[in-house]
Amino acid sequence: MNYTDADLSRIIEMAWEDRTPFEAIELQFGISSTQVVKLMRSSMSEGCFKVWRQRHAGRKTKHQQLRSPHVQRAYCKTQYKHR
Image 1 (tube, one colour):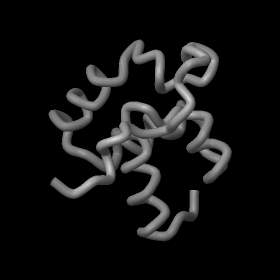
Image 2 (cartoon, helix red, strand yellow; image 1 turned 45 degrees about the vertical axis):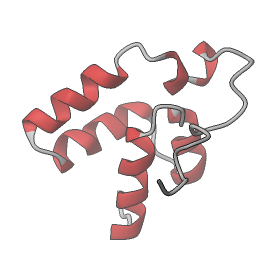
Image 3 (cartoon, rainbow, N blue to C red; image 1 turned 90 degrees about the vertical axis):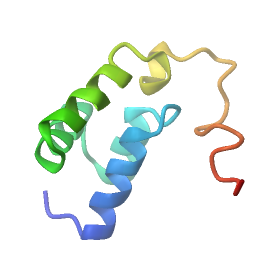
């Protein structure tokens, strides 16, 4: 994988987002969910990686096929609003 620092930063950001499915990351960057996990493991400390895995294990919004058809947006409506 030859990604720029900006690309790697965006992939990691998308992986942390609850509502961004792995398929969106694959569509945008050509990296599968398995490769995202490997990237996250190599990019973070062990503790941080464990927190991320626990947070996303079984989360239906991270996999397009498991998502409810009612989930139409990729992020929480308050995610990009300044508080």
